[in-house]
Length: 356
Ligand code: AMP
Ligand code: MN
Ligand code: MN
Image (cartoon, rainbow, N blue to C red; front, side, top):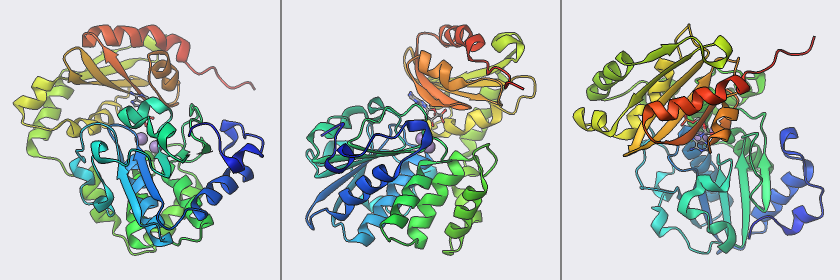
């Protein structure tokens, strides 16, 4: 079912940008507390999953296991390939390919997906499941679940997941904590981005107190890549272009990587996820962009801003979504054509100066 829930229906819907209200939390708690002992729970995160998608999903799944949920699967749309940096995550034993996911679970829980389109071929579970629950932190979230816990002020979906686990009386253990820590560090850029509030550091402290090893985790997740990827990065960064004019003169830096680039260096697509972090360092541009070819004439586009431009506006206008300073979409055509469309949106996406 989608768009309704017994408990949520009696409570006024809460506007998305204020975060979940008491009624939303109560509805989510009641869904999980009232599961029958043999209920089948399907956890789904967004296509091409990142650390927050996988970490919040698996951390929450481990928490549900502690609550006594037995029949449980975690999955994501597309090929069932877990990016190497996340292959050490606790809870991966729960993961099944999308093709093997329960066709009609009693409850489906979605993680880190702003809209149904991010669920790919698993979107039908919103209708076939007995109930649906959405955990997310995108301001643009369309509230596509029966119950929606959407907090645009949360640094990661894992923040919402941990709050729900706490309400359910599930304390942290090292397995849950490692998953949630990977999610939190992924989405805060290892505690560097704007959303890194005191509350984020308090949560990190509680996660670390379980005994997890932040050095090992960060090395595995962020600081390890095959030598072929190092050389591939050299090539792709070497062809980056800097354009001062776009975004009302705030500047755009961009580059692209093709399937042929990956093949020549014998690399899997996941290695390209870290590229944007090298490109966005460019001092002379507010906006950075990496186009990663996914098929002939098709690109996964990453956009970042240093703070002058709302790149989620650009991404939304071009069929994608995301956050103000980190967004993406699927681009079609040549790389030059896709970048042309981005240039065309950038002036309108400059954030006006705050009123005095
Ligand atoms: P990425 O550049 O892939 O790290 O993505 C940055 C953010 O943009 C993600 O956290 C998503 O919220 C969003 N995003 C990326 N790609 C898409 C897409 N194709 N559709 C909607 N949102 C996207
Ligand atoms: Mn994500
Ligand atoms: Mn996220």
